Image 1 (cartoon, rainbow, N blue to C red):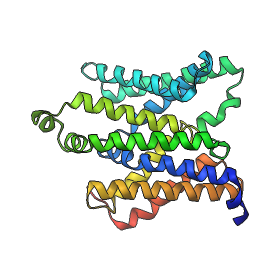
Image 2 (image 1 turned 90 degrees about the horizontal axis):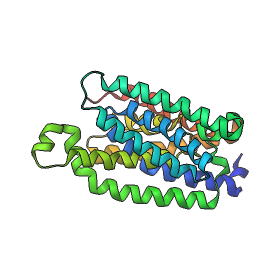
Image 3 (image 1 turned 120 degrees about the vertical axis):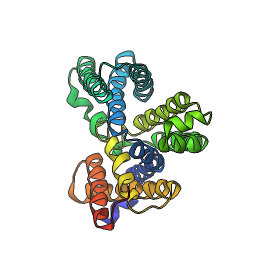
Length: 266
C-alpha cells in the first residue's frame, strides 16, 4: 500500500487535489453562507456544456468551462430581477438544460459520451505535471482575488441591503465571486469531475461551520477538511480500486457525518 507513495502519478494526484482543496475551502464557505449550493451546481453543469463546446471548437475544455459558466452567471443575474419565476426554478431549468446539452454535444463530437466520463467524475490519477502547475497557479490567483473581495463578501453575506447602503458594489462583487466559482469548476474537472465539484466545496465547509468560531477560521478549517478528503479518497482508491473522484467526495461526506455530534452553529 505504501509503495504507491513512490509512484509519480500518485504524488501528482495528491498535489493537484491539495491545490483544489486550497481554494475550494473558502469558496465553499461563501456558498454555504449564502445558500448558493444550487447555484454552484448550475455553474458546474454549465462547465460540462463548456467542455463539450471546447471539444467541438478544438479549444481547451477548461477555457470553455469558464466562458460558458460566466455567460450562464450573467444570464442568471439578469433573470433574477424578473418576478414571474422563482430563482430556484430558473436555476433548475438552466442547470438541467446545460447538463443535457453538454452531454449531447460531447456525444456528437466524440461519438460516445462514455469516452469522456473523466469530465463527469474526474480522473485525478492521470494528471500531468503541467496540470499540477495549472491547478496551483489558478488556485493562487483565485485566493489573491478572494482576499481582495473578502470583506465585501462578508458584508454582503451578512446583509446585502446594508452592504449596498455602505457603498459596496454588490453586483460587481457577485460577478467576481462567480468568476472564482467558474475557476474552481474548471480546475476541478480532473480531480472530482463536474458532477461532484459542488459536493467537494459544500461538504467540508458545512462540516467546518460546526467547529469554527470566525469566518476566517471556518475558511481555513474548510480547506484543511477538503485536503483530508482528497488524501483519504486517493488512498481509498489505491487500496480498493475505487474511482478516485467519487472516493474523494465520499471522504468529504464522511467528515461531515463525523462532525454531526459536535453541535450545529446557526
